[in-house]
Picture 1 (cartoon, rainbow, N blue to C red):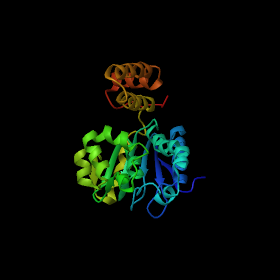
Picture 2: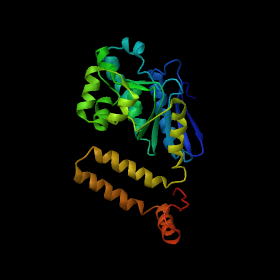
Picture 3: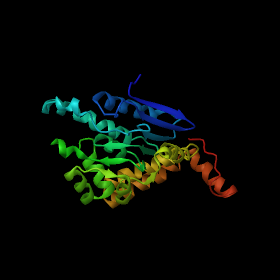
Picture 4: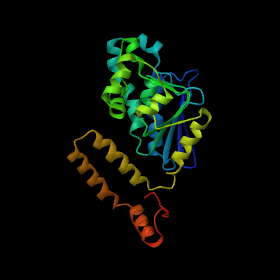
Length: 259
């Protein structure tokens, strides 16, 4: 059983809920629990999409600085793979993933939002990568995922200065995809995720892997990845169901089996 991170499942949507009062600081234990819960969300057939949420007050105010302050270089060498791997485990969930951001999402919390496919933020959300103010750098994917999301110049500005970004600026630079009243963020994220509850899961997985793997490659390699996934989709029962339903009934009416 996990203590600070749990997976709540309802109607095809799994919520990865951070719950470590009072600011959801991402400790070593939280990192390990994120990895465990991400694996559960990946494995469960009743989870078709995932929402990552820290609750109504705060998403996650960062990694646990008090814990890190006592760590030596060799301590961090031994730990950094697991630290980065916790966020990567969320990024690699082969299903649509959305982050619902209330309150602060700073440092490791911001890096966790970057692992999602889509980000919804509250009007009062505050995001950023302030690690430089501690004399360190982002270590859970921030230097890589932030640069790919908002571009290298904006990412460097945020990381060089360590400044906080309010929701309106986050939307303008592409750090989040939608800004909503705080009370509506989680429900809107659930609604976005729920639309995939009856979708073709292997097609969704193929889209996600094609995009994510392609972004790490040149265009020719990316096109090769796409071809392989495109052809592979024809091995699924859902492809046959979907195309036959289109022919017989028009688009958007297929009853997929998930196989």
